Length: 288
Image (cartoon, rainbow, N blue to C red; front, side, top):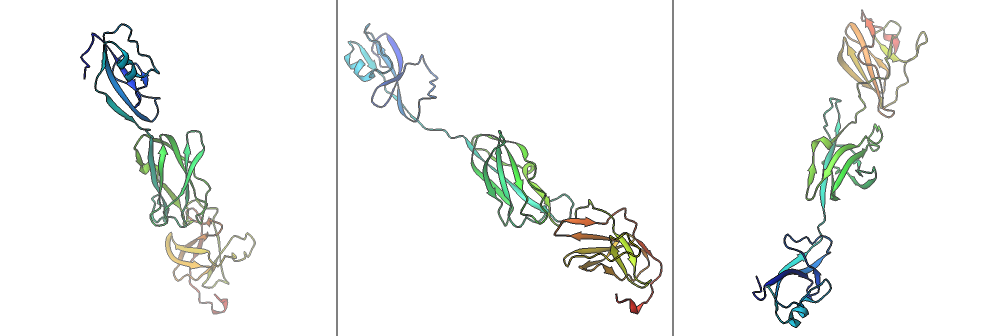
């Protein structure tokens, strides 16, 4: 309110004790840089020609000492620190059938890094073991990217290139599918190392996989956890674990896809010639 005394007036900002912090020309009043605390905004009317308030003076004392001056009721302002921060979250999933779409969540959980604009990791969290979600709380406002380390997966490919372009503004909760990650976990990546050779045992009813170029080739020494998928004319007819042999029951062209889950290597697939079985012979002494 106008103090109502004197033809002259001025705006005065003081601390709680009345010390003058500023003499602005008028509103709006900018208090940036004043720090945390309480201040009062006054309008002072004065007629006294010697009344000359300055920063650092006590406004209450000046008015009391003037021959004609008065302060209005104060506008009390509490200055609080404004922390600009937000939240960044997403999901890491696993593609089990190599269709490019995430399915089950990874096990064990995976580390996720939040990278600032300078390329420095400012925080690391681990994905939730049940949901595969990750969340960064109290992220200062700014530009970020997210990087996932998939070394905990059965078939790691190393740290994945970061997803760029995350901008956090005050109060933001950035949950964007563009920043989700999908990994191939089961090692049946459709990019194959090479084709698998096939041979027939003593012209009998057994064929076997080989990577040996000798004649006759030796059966492939497969690991106990290797998986061999046998195909007849391109159609899956059998899955065998830890054994290079297969006994066909139907004539046709047979191919095989072999997966070594430890080394994350796959052989075979489309484009491999295979072996043609034109007759089924009962050969009991073959041992297969």
